[in-house]
Length: 251
Image (tube, rainbow, N blue to C red):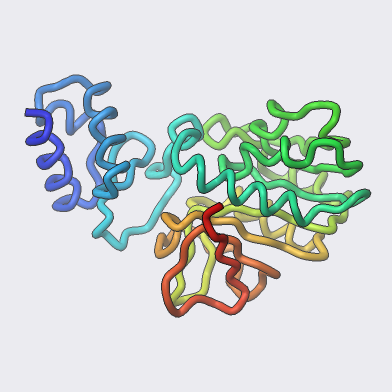
């Protein structure tokens, strides 16, 4: 029964492009926690993409919007090993006395332990970074603004105005997805895109960090051409990638 249910979820998701957890539970006559567990298993098998409130087809070239993007708590434990490898590489770039910007999102959830003991300044709008900060991680400056519970970060005009006060050796950025054909980096909505663009303006070098699952994902807002980054760091990549791609080998 469980395997049959997984097949039906995958089929319905592919047919519709996106199906909510609530609708799947009603159609299959099981609880929403059961559907969420099924979707986790299907995502692990590479058969669907879990998003906030439901499931998205891997076959659909749709547009990722804020309503479709998964909440931070749902993303926290996805692709953990890949994200950790990206964090190790980011930390390896940082030297004593550097000032760096760390973007919001779960990509950088484990970066601070790799910065332990370095005399640096960190600027962020991410509550995830704030929650993991310790005294031996350097000096932390937190950008204020309108707090987004979905993204666990501060956004809006106040965040942009406060960001203007700083300059960085590095801006470490994440995104909702990239389009290798159009050579664009995307977010699911406008507010996070504006913070990323401002951080890039203020940084000597900007690096985009993405795991392989975010390639070929189009978001609602493009915030930069891929060639605008000094490096695009990823754990996997296929053919026809830009020259600034840095593909990390599995350690």
